[in-house]
Length: 217
Length: 274
Image 1 (cartoon, chains in turn purple, cyan):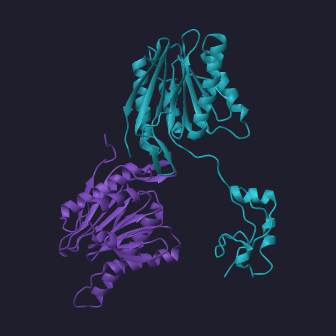
Image 2 (cartoon, chains in turn green, brown):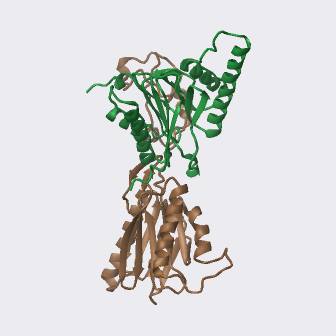
Image 3 (cartoon, each protein chain N blue to C red):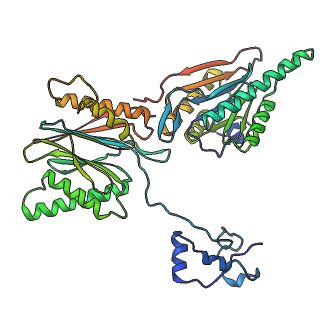
């Protein structure tokens, strides 16, 4: 069974202690999942950290890398986007231009290129899933897995993806993909956050949290 | 295109290349001269130059690989038992190699060794000790006693003082008076008999708990009765649950061995798999 996923899957060379998984459905719905473990060497520093960052009301990103670096890059991007939106209103444009996912990803990529930070991001915006690599390149994909747990996560995504999945099924698939990363990879652990960008542009970002999937008894 | 110069090498340089230990600076002498290396010069990969000819470089091979995991031994003062436990996870980097790899090994009917670290060294250490025990038993008609085995392990570790066994050991058993004994080691053979010991990646997480709960050094309210066997086993389970929360290399399951004069019993306790 040849799935479109095989043509569009893409991974990142960065090996950070995390598992991020992303899926874009035909309808334009984008789902990102992330684990919640932050490590300092071999020690778990945070068991409930949030790796998904909201950039605008209809665009969010998942970051892999040093948590301070990811937080800072997304925070400054969020501030710049908010400032641009305010300037738009000030200039009296007829409508405030929404930011396309590619523009947000390009903004993150530019920050990565200029700062030398070794972080990778998955960006969900305007119905697209984009992969920003640490070197600063942007790639639009349908399916992506990032981090040290990307191999088990990608295996799960590839095994169960179907082109006619519903949003709920896709959310469960992303959760299961991150859960595989949590169980197979030592750098990932604890719980899963799954955020969904709905196909309908007016609908808000849907956030779900699956607690403690690493027990697996 | 760049060419890999074919140059008559000494045997030492050949050996260095074969095992990639150190490439000496004399390789720089190969970089110069003509680039007219032809097919007849017999180079294996004409278009690939791994930087070998460009400048002196050094490659290092690390003989150790951290397999992760933690082991702990507890025998309260005056107890007639010893509890020895180790998690069952074997890992390499961020990957899990096995969720069911035992760190415990029975040496005699009265003592067990638990080791974490590089599993190849652990296996070799077990083999050496087992062989010494079998030879002794064959000659003397009885097994090595626990204190003697503890000292044997110490001497065995020191015999490799300058290329150590990458094994972090705890040896537990019952001694000649049927009192429980726990011995702690570093990787070159320092030996100490103590009521408890933890070794491995989460040892720093466990030792303070053991100081508090077994030796009661960091608390004012002391226990009236000594720790029983069941309390020790519960304590060990809680230690591993705690360690599994904060140490990424510890998890999956704990193998707990209880050693008394009557023998050794083992049980498993499941931990988180993440």
